[in-house]
Length: 265
Image (cartoon, rainbow, N blue to C red; front, side, top):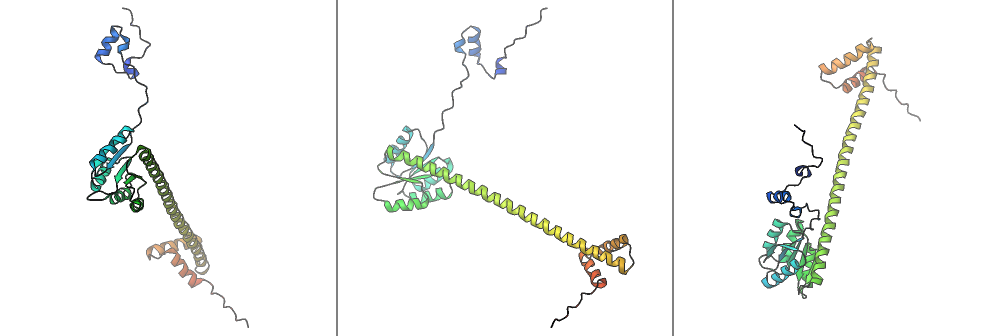
């Protein structure tokens, strides 16, 4: 029986290509065009999302249509400030178009909530006769504003400006947070280093005192060096007295008194 020749071509599964029954049948019949080739076209860019808050339905419809015609995806429509806040929290859009005057919660208050929570940039929609409200809106955190009637030449650049400013501010906040975290880590490391240094200094001081006390025991009480050290160590453990305190007591008892300083007159 002749050995079956092993194909040098990788099978469809090895290539990662999955064919339907219709495609397999078409390929067997020689209809190569019927077999779909894998697509290598780049994925289309994600549409930027918007929440629109406008209490007048006609204006809201016009605004939504204008945004969708220019490639935006409107993910929420609100007729008052409370709805605008809820929809923004729910969808976390790329930008919010917010009318200033709305029922239940006005646009400035709603913009303040959204900006305080840092959910999305807000573009305020104002009338020509509302310069004081524009100041209040920017004070509440709005990134840009557009005056009515809505025009693409005014609205679209304002959206881009708002999203750009929002991204820059968040990058800055991220940098500040990283810097604060790094500073906090450095301070903690410095604190640990200081504690280790203090402990090392205390250990060195204790060792010097113990060595001096050991020498005094050898000199005054005829201890051997090893015997003096063991006596200090055992007495410290038995009496629960720190070695440093015990050594200081030995030095105070057996050490030479400090010479009195003569009064120079």
